[in-house]
Length: 214
Image (cartoon, rainbow, N blue to C red):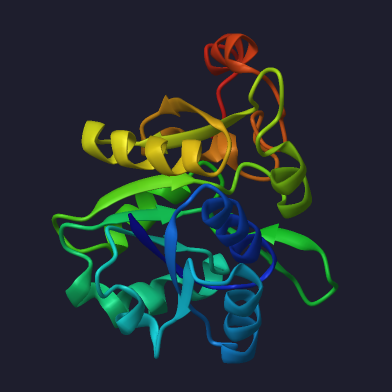
């Protein structure tokens, strides 16, 4: 299978490495073309650098938008014509830095990032919020954990998106666990009760039924 990854920064690069290690073919695109080329060279034959964001989607069955939340909508608008019928995976946390360098949320308190992103996507797109529930270093170190795999939480509103993103999560070396619909995506974000949590499937089920995020 082929997955497009748009954004080859810290998290995007880690996601690409883990998917490639699991046998996924990748098409990489980035505003920083040099970083995409460097990553593709490191990954070898499973990865190719696309000419641009739209080209990355050619032949891909899914796209991971590993972008800062503040630029996410503009990239979605750019490639919207190619997204209908696609699985779109968004790991982005709705955070940015203020003038003093403090991390601040860019959405109003209680507003779901998943539902916000869903509103930006064209009809027919299947959205899953996934791959952003761990920071890049923890994601890489927790992949293919043994003897019990680490869980990667996700949120989606559709069964088909769930099945598709679960395949990608397993390819990356994790056991998937659905939290709920997109309205609960805040639980996966920085500050959410499931962010940077490394647990196995049994404990994950207990946590999912526990405290709820906004």
